[in-house]
Each structure stands twice: as C-alpha cells, then as structure tokens.
Amino acid sequence: MTTAILVVAGYLAGSMPFGYWLVRLVKHDDIRRHGSGNIGATNVWRAYGRWLGVPVILLDVLKGLVPALVATLLVGDLAGVLAGGAAMLGHWRPLFLGFARGGKTVATAGGTLFGVVPLVGLAAVAVWIVIFLVGRYASVASMLSAASIPLLAWALGEPWPVIAFGAVAAAAVAVLHRPNISRLLAGTESRFELRRRRAAAASR
Image 1 (cartoon, rainbow, N blue to C red):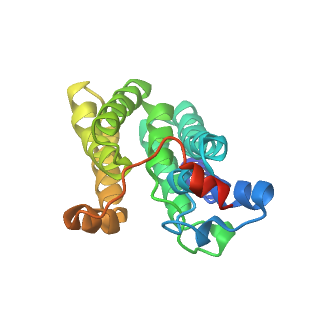
Image 2: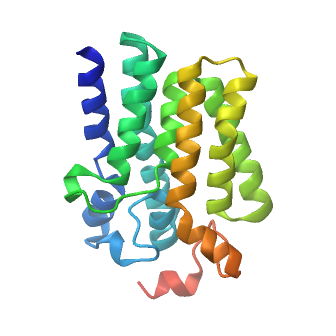
C-alpha cells in the first residue's frame, strides 16, 4: 500500500507543468504556442532564454528526484524507480493540463536517477554534457545519455530495478524524440543556442 501511495504521489508531482506555469506567470504566454509546442525546459529555453529555462530544468529534475528519493528511503530501490517512473509519466501526460502532451521526460528521468542512484545520475549527466558540447544537439545528447543509463547501472553493479528502469527510460526517451530523429535524418534539426539571437529576443 505504501508503494502504491508513493507511485500516485510521484505521478501527481510529475504532472506539475512548471514550464507552462512559469511562462504563463512571468510572460503571460502559453509556451505550447512556441517552437516544438513542448512544455519542457529545452523549449522554454529556446523561446525565452536561460532565465526561464534554467528554473524549469531544476523544477523538472525535482519532480523526479523528490518522489524517487522519498520512496527509496521509505521502501527501497524498486519503489524509488516506480515513483520516479510515475513522475516521468506525469510529466509526459500531466493531469493538471488535462492529460495533454507534456514534456519529453529527460530532466525528470535524471531527477529519478539522482534520487535512487546518484552516481549513475552524475555519470549520465556527464555523458549528456560531453555529447551536447560536441554537437550542440540537445535531442542527441538526451537520447544517448538515456541509452547509457542501463549500461552505467550495470557497470556500477546496481540492482536489477535500477537497470530495468534505465532500459525503460531509455526506450521512452527515444520514442518521445521520434520527431527529432526524423529531423536529424533529414538534416533539419536545429542546434541549440545557449543564448537566443538578439533578433529573436527583440521581436518579443
């Protein structure tokens, strides 16, 4: 029963659409009308820059970290990855947006890893940073870092729930990035700009 309650709490935490709420609060705008239409941190950063993008990243990470950490401490690794997985599901289909499309779960998956197995989380972040700095494609960095999770967990001797979570999370991230994969194959995927172009900023 405790695990079930923690999983439901994880889903509710994940359902908090911070990207949507923060843009609505600060800019009085709907982030879903911009870019990819996604409520996640990458789209917020592209549309409004790092001053909104960074807070959304941190909040989306916390959505996975807090439920996973609490569940791990109270019950164990399996409950932790289940609660974190539920947070990812909530981020993808948030209750508070009427189950409409949410984000691609990358930051929330990272938060889950930090809550259950911090060392694997740090290693996956390092993979993301290296790949992003080399290519400037956030989508490629996200997919490859997610794909590295089960391998990292196995290499570090983590228990089977963590390895299984890594495999499922990697598959979910890949599926949710299908439009990005299509654009990569077509050569039309945009490289990420750490700072918005002045012209774009001036047009708002």
